[in-house]
Amino acid sequence: MTEETTPSVEEIKARLKVEVPVEEEDVTKADVKNPDVTEELREFGKQFADTIRSAWNSAERQRLETELRDGMRSFADEVDKAIQEIKKSPAADRVKTEAVNVRDKVQSSDVGHKTRVGVAQGLQVLSEQLAKLAERFTPAEKSASEEESAE
Image 1 (cartoon, rainbow, N blue to C red):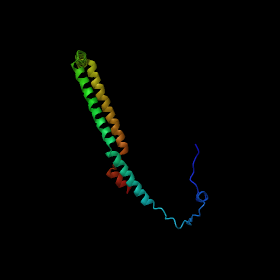
Image 2 (image 1 turned 120 degrees about the vertical axis):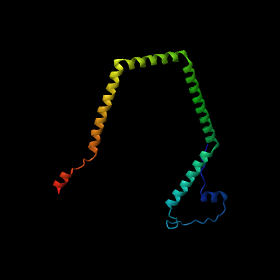
Image 3 (image 1 turned 90 degrees about the vertical axis):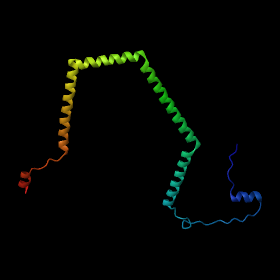
Image 4 (image 1 turned 45 degrees about the vertical axis):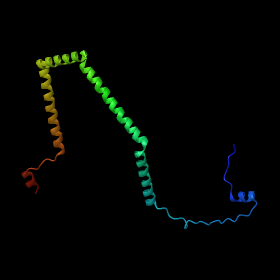
């Protein structure tokens, strides 16, 4: 394949062997209008908004949205179905019974009591430390005697 290029005016004249009058314009920088950046940005913004609007309203986007909604419904239905099946299974009953038994043992044992006391004490210490930290960020109020002595 040969690469074709656009012939120049002189080449066309030579091929036709006819004198074709061609007016050449002498373009200077003064003749070129200064570009208006604000106008170009406004036009670009319009075009961008039109493109987004077209994409949003396209049949493909609507089809994809419908497909995603249907897929999410199917997913939720399958998860709900699995949960319902698990709830009805004998294994779920055994796990539930064992969990209740463990809870009862922990509540009635000394371990349960010690755990509750430890958690409560830990929360109390944490609360005290947070209060100290808050005091560091809050300026202390000067007492009346400190203000008088400063004057």
